[in-house]
Image (cartoon, rainbow, N blue to C red; front, side, top):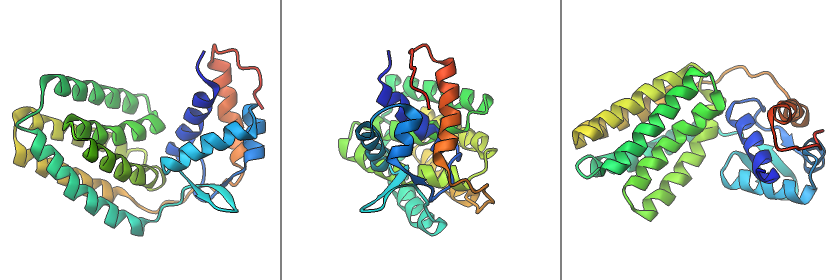
Length: 238
């Protein structure tokens, strides 16, 4: 049986990455504990994890809120990513091991499947993960840490400001990067990465969002669907 905390974390993170929860919406421990049928202490641990991954904001003496990143922040973050990630792929192109190439190929296949299935949350998650997989392929622990930090700062930007239809574009752009890596083309890989990150940045646009300040109600509906399709035997569904 999957751990209940992991299942709840996955449910909430998918709702966030799918843009189901309005930025700035409060996430109240007591309400979430009721929805998921677990203690406030366990909810607090889940919220801490979501905060660490920058999917939500934890404000001292106020509580947890759906992350509300600004487009002004995006410029500086994507500039940093272009600097770091063009270096990563330039380094990888002549040195990419067959096992790492296979791992990237499998990852791209999962991205393609998520886009085809219209799974917005999974597309956003996998798109972000592609970049940390590249960092991991360098074998440099410090680069992996740096990329995890940078990617965590952009996932909610994409969830909040990029249209759902952009997922196919991102997937195709990842393929271009991968193709250059397979050819051993450092300059081509760096160019493809720079172009990809710039295009992602330009696709971030303010959009009208349906205001929904009752996170518990949204999550209750999602959780009911999770419980209905689950074989974990979870009985305490709000």
